[in-house]
Image 1 (cartoon, each protein chain N blue to C red):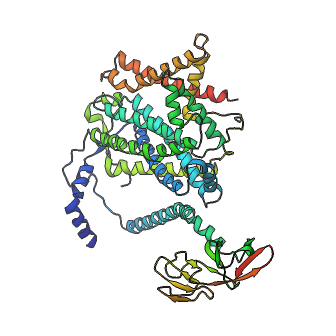
Image 2 (image 1 turned 90 degrees about the vertical axis):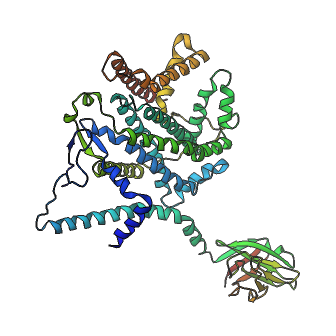
Length: 173
Length: 360
């Protein structure tokens, strides 16, 4: 059955629907055949997995690199203590954007800059002394990170801030 | 029951059973030389591997000034990036090799004769484009070796009288190989060449199915009842796929056991390292030009031009073989074509060996 039927002549001259060799199944052959098919299927699956695994890992690499960056617990911002009053410094805490706000009253506040609604980067507005997201108009409190109005479902997470003469240290609260 | 219904639904709209009936009537000749029929399929398979791994490399590769850095990232930072890159490079080389085997088997089986002239011509065009694929892809990592190989390679069109320097500058994007060269080679490699290659390949494959496999003259001389055939589907297709699987295994083995190296970053201020040489499939023409330049009365520029002319003449004769060797009987012309083929194989092998022998 597995060998190729050899047909003489340029083209096969058999009428439609006729078989080259009648296939007669011996008793007990069905189980052997079924076992063979199952084994071949399993081998094929393993083979495909062996090909797919490196490709998946290759494509997922940036994700894994970003994940290892989120393990960061502390960021030192050199010379950030010179930040003027009523202004903001945007920086990366691990892989995600964050902000350091020096309020008019001299208080230092740092929090994540990723909107809890759909992930846009938010912005500090010194005149209104609030945090605003331009994507869908979400507003947060610039001192506590609390979601004040608009669609954001959760507050922005605060970081701990330590100011010294060399710079500002921001760490996970 | 449901699968039958689905099949029927699709069949009514797309005519699958007509296609199946059509495929049932296709046969492939069986004879002592049948083995060579697989090499076109192997070339096709390796081309598909090129497309697939090429797209994967495209995910992280950045042409231009950052080219080297991005290839370094692919090779050393991204998981299994070295393997994808290695598979792309190995498969490129294996593909050129498979195409060459396919070409010579077609040549010696005289499969270019009527009505298959277009098959031969489109095949030669595909080989030509494949070698430009190779040449342009070789530069993309922008390491020392690829930089100097491209520099030297682009000197060849530069010696063409009158238009040479302009052509070379156009290809390079300036007087020297630089980030502009990488950028335009990249555009060539991933957009222009595939856009020409794919329709030509479709044409080539359509011709194969239209005319079927050619048989060598010795088999053609047999009376029809002594010739053997096997059904194309599923018998030949099954064997073809087995060949693909073998090719994939060989490729996987080569790519993982001998990962493709990445040299130092190209720097025009650093002198060329020892042993700069073209890829093996360019070694022969490169060496032929070098040898012709050594002939006493051909030294210097006239030698280079004469070399290019002679080489071009050889290629033109090779391409035009279907229009020269036309008779079915093995007359004097057929024998001349056969010897011309043997001479070409010998010249290719000999100059390649000499080329590698004399690498300093």
